[in-house]
Image 1 (cartoon, rainbow, N blue to C red):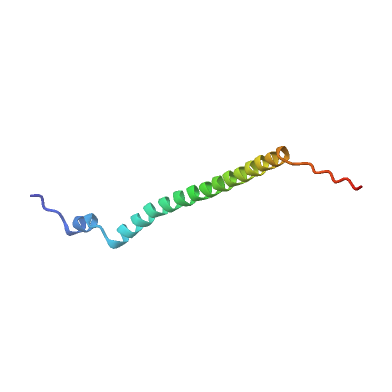
Image 2: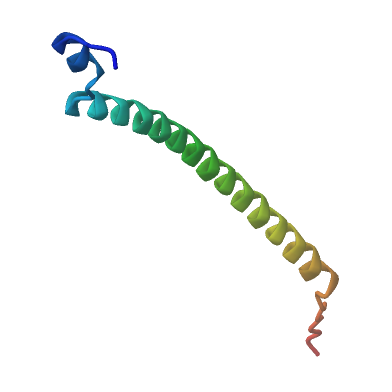
Length: 76
């Protein structure tokens, strides 16, 4: 067994402050990544929704033109 001084033992101990600092560091990185991905997902979903709405509008408009019946009223 090696004899260690009391100062060396205190350096090896992990304090509550050390754990909290490391936890904040890890969760900070995760939160930043999550926020970045969330913004991208919301933007992508909004763009996809707009594209779908435009396509539905254009398809409905073209179908409406093809099936339009012309009724002519003649007054006698």
